[in-house]
Image 1: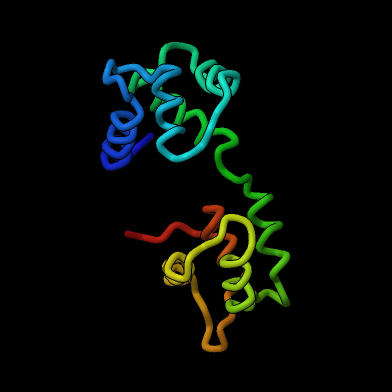
Image 2 (image 1 turned 180 degrees about the vertical axis):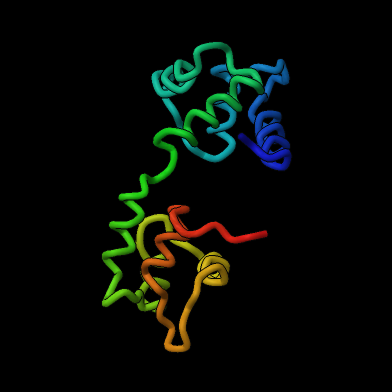
Length: 148
């Protein structure tokens, strides 16, 4: 399910989280991880996180948890993506500047570079408008697959 690069990144993250270096992420490891990013968590929250795994959290178990999350509710349903972008739709087009402003202002704010990177993958006409249906197809994977 994961690329070699993703597995390597997960391994690096696992090693950072495994504060006591025993090969298992336990309660104290989780607490240290949250402490390192400045977030206080309760014992109850830590217990709930640990109880999500059916066994002690070694690296393999962590990969299984990520896979389960990514396959389940860890991503937006296509309907949510479609509804979100349809709110910006005006006769089949999305005003690129209006969308840029929203992405950089609301919710999990994008940086200008993140918006530019995303826009590099979209078709934007010479007036700055994005084709709504092609954008939705790209984000939901419902469009025609490109030949490689």
